[in-house]
Image (cartoon, rainbow, N blue to C red; front, side, top):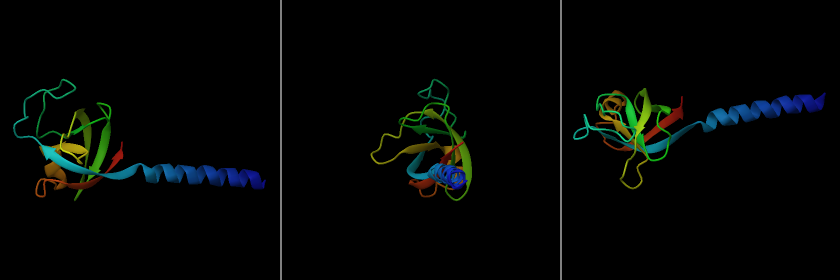
Amino acid sequence: MLFKILGVSSALLLACSSTAAATSSMLTSWYGPGFHGRLTANGEVFNEMGYTAAHKSLPFGTTLEVCYRSCVRVRINDRGPFISGRELDLSRGAAEAIGLTEVGVDYVTYSYK
């Protein structure tokens, strides 16, 4: 009986740990001007006012919820950023929606959706 209780507790603890680990932060910037209408790395036309993002290694189509002053969901459709230390480049529309355009570069929280 005690083994079953410990087994359930362990499983519950593991589930809680996995959820907590799913939210993290990364240094993020934004892009748009000069790229609007050009092809992204996955072959689609870039819309600077869309809710998309560039990441160096996440699979195309990955959806993230990105939060700064507010939150948006973005889809990875491009590669970048190509400035050392930065991990995510948001489209202008996504950056404006969360309030990142004013500061330009900062840490955001994100989770996989």
